[in-house]
Length: 386
Ligand code: AMP
Image 1 (cartoon, rainbow, N blue to C red):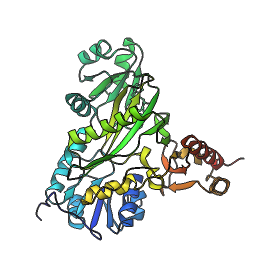
Image 2: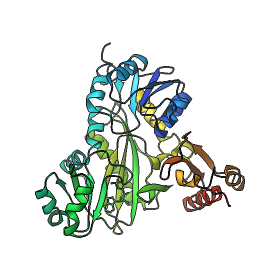
Image 3: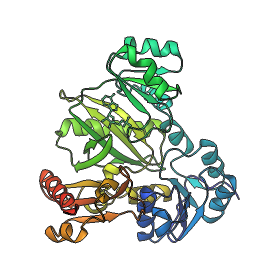
């Protein structure tokens, strides 16, 4: 097998693959199939959300050589649905097939130390932070970033996992011990007024586009609701989109890249974290966008023109977490009958554990706050009354 040149265009019905079998992989597969591609998945489970809808599934951990060999044999273009894919695995694949985003984007965004160092080197705005690799670093942290601070593991943290807030210097040692004293970053506490995100897409020819800014509300550190476009005013919106494009450019990303920000009451943006892929806050682009974030991922991977990133109409999305199943199967009929405009997405997951993302609801409405109110109301109707 020879290396695929960067200028290659993969046309339908080429076979595309996604590494990772969750809901983001599922929505990538669905977008690829709609454009006429065959889509396969490298998944740890035979019956995960993406494997259920793909033309084929290779069941393997994401960095096992036999699985990667099978993937390179079967697919002409390969992308990822999560950031914890090993860089050597992606480099190995990229010698054989088109792999987008490339290993460097994934490698930088899978580790908070590398991510923050990279962004700082490129002059991109961050909250105060410092590395914590030793007891000495830990003791210095309050002086460098202030208190309260958040201690975050450098690797494999998501949805608030692997992080602890520390209010007093006396609590630092216990907090680090609770994270097993692994490599961390200490981050100064940001009194943000809002959390926003921007999904950007960049093509192999360096053309880049940003979706409108999303306003995100979290519950228990997990995304709960998103509204787009965020009511942040044109200057902040332009700055956030500009920063997302600047990050994609600095990383040389080909593919979709999401940037999450904190926004202060004074209108100041700092970058919280990066994801080298579509994002939960962009799910509403499936119905509200000229093209969706998943179609953007397909187009960038295949070397097609990127498509539009404008919204056809404002929209809101609310997540459906496993907690909703605590009283039995949610009452789909009642929620959907009350508002015919509610769009239901379920990811085909069997085990509705608390905090697990099972699906989402999207509502389109010319007024984004109305869209959010309708989505929240629909979700409330899902809960079965005893
Ligand atoms: P993360 O996994 O880094 O996105 O953090 C999860 C959530 O914790 C964020 O969405 C924020 O709500 C909160 N958080 C993280 N870092 C900070 C910070 N430096 N200051 C205040 N809140 C934070």
